[in-house]
Image 1 (tube, rainbow over the protein chains, first blue to last red):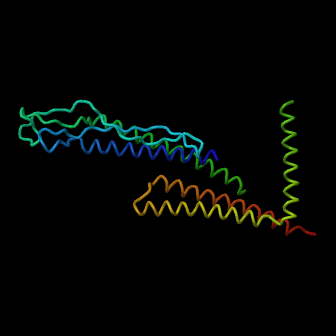
Image 2 (tube, each protein chain N blue to C red; image 1 turned 90 degrees about the vertical axis):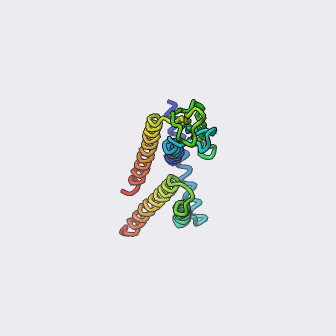
Image 3 (cartoon, each protein chain N blue to C red; image 1 turned 135 degrees about the vertical axis):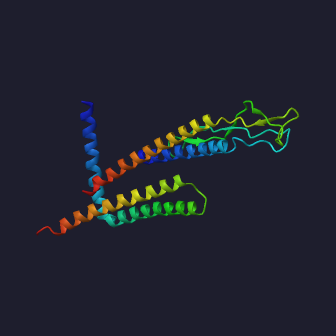
Length: 136
Length: 100
């Protein structure tokens, strides 16, 4: 049934946005994680991916959370000779996480999730009102 | 023209179906009871899957979205079955109260 399928599709979207949110949480939480050793790399930012996939059983295209890919941009550096992660010149490599970008990503994930919730709510009320028609 | 042809074909199909259903019902005895049984089985099945999802969520496995989906599905199926049952019972009662 089409309305049931739309519920399942919205649920897959919600699942995808949850996994995206997890990646964003990782990025925000690790925004200041440095390497414990002087020559190591700090936390590298991850980018959440979502892919569309055709569900044969359902007969519809659903969303699948993809594997997070690593952001290969440059690390930030900061002069801090006392830090155990500092190199010979006294510079510390910091993660390539920009909290502003992460917050924007988070908002986007939140709004997408809310949109999926609204689809579910509308679908449910359509189904419920159709069943109501049977009752009287 | 085309619409009229389609409509007449659909009408004939419906008439055939209803007469066929009536004859099969009278000959095999498969009727409302069987329908209710299968509908209830279906409803109970969806309820069970909802319960399973909820139990998995409580155990730390499975996600919230699946629970919501399964429970929603179960609720809707039960609602439909109950509505159909009420409808048919009302029809039955109005037939039983018919003055002869």
